[in-house]
Image (cartoon, rainbow, N blue to C red; front, top):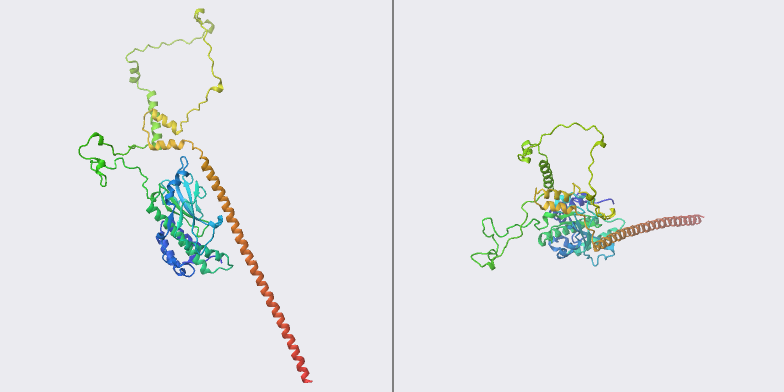
Amino acid sequence: MDTITIDGVDEHAFRHTVEDMLRFDEIEDALTQLRALVEPYAGTLLPARFRDVCPADIEITGWDKLASRLPGYDRPHFPITAIGVVLADARVLGGPGPKDGRLAPYVKTYYFSDDAYPFTNAARDDLLDGYSRDGFGWQGDYAASDITLSVKGIDDLHGAIIALEDRLLDRLQPDPEELRAGAIGACFVSALIHAALRTAIRTRALPRPLCVLAACDGVYPFFDAPVAGWDECGIDAALPEAWPSELDDGTVREGADAAEVGHGEASLLEIRSHREAKHLALAIGDEDVLAAARFAEEAGAQRLAMTDDNALKGLFHGVPVAPLDDQPEWTGDESELPVETLPPEHLVEAPAVEEPLAEDVPLVEPANPYDPREQFRIAEAAQAFPTGRGLRQKLKEAEEAAPPPLSARIRTAASGAGNLVRSRAARLARKTRLKRLALQRGIARRLTAVRVAAGEGLDAAGAAVRKGVGGLAARAGRARRR
């Protein structure tokens, strides 16, 4: 069997349709469609709880641990800006299978920085630019991974799907209805986890602005979709107001504590400032930096190049200039020129000075005019502009990133080794499963051959018996006639 049809389309097109709904944040439509499709199988091939389960029944645990995990995975100039919640198969790592029809979803948490993809300030549309049918562009470029987050509340549903999948893999000719029920149920469980993540982001918030992604690592239905962009994380990343408690006319904002603002007369000991730290009113960007540098260069050139006659006369301020007389060009011999010599009493021997050797002199590289730091020095010397956040960010990016600490390198190496072990274990599991299927098919072929051979032998024996009985009957008839 190549494929099955679900809701009038083949299984691949159906999965892609549901995946697109998750990617474009149409989760309610996806759940409604999947719930209607899973209804006929609830209570028969699937647990009856599929009829009334909802995202509120799912709990995302470990959410409060993210605040302590993120700083440990940050790198200089590359903080963690996105997390991926990935549904994986624990049996590949040697984990247990379903027990009494229950199995908790195995979830891994991956941490990404802008080194893998520009997650900072990325909205859902920006994230979708990195997705395709084959996955996403930052696949494998994670900074770290752990099992901080977990999913609770659907152990019976997830266990039923995994148990049904194992039964289907053990059969040579799976039932199309069981395949259809398993596919719809797996899509429904993945959509429920996706919706539960979105609810957790909106109700419990995140410790910092992050992009949250969801994926399936080697687990059907292989969905990859963003849960929330930078603007959906529930945190206002903008800078706070400079005057949070007062309006322009000096009145107090609604909700502000009157005791904090102060009223009436008070002593100097009771007067204190309630205003936050001031911020720059002007932030200079990259284009402003280059424009200021060009302005400073042009101003310096204009100060040196003076072509106005009045300006030149002002330099001497009324001092008469001696007229220049034309002198004939010298055509004689240099030996005829007078030579001035000093008397011996004026000749003094200069003290010896030890000059440093060439290798002791530090080599200073010339300034690069295209270096952001050199542009900053030139413009600052000309006092052409004030410093701003954009310029500081540009200088910060020009600095060489410090090497990651030893613990981060160890974690990266351990994570790479774990991924290698997991991939080889998955490959070995697939090979073992294929061998088991091949062995079962071989046994079935042999049994069929035995049945065919036995049937042919029985047919031949029956024909021989019938022939012998017929011969005996003929002989008996001839004997009676005699």
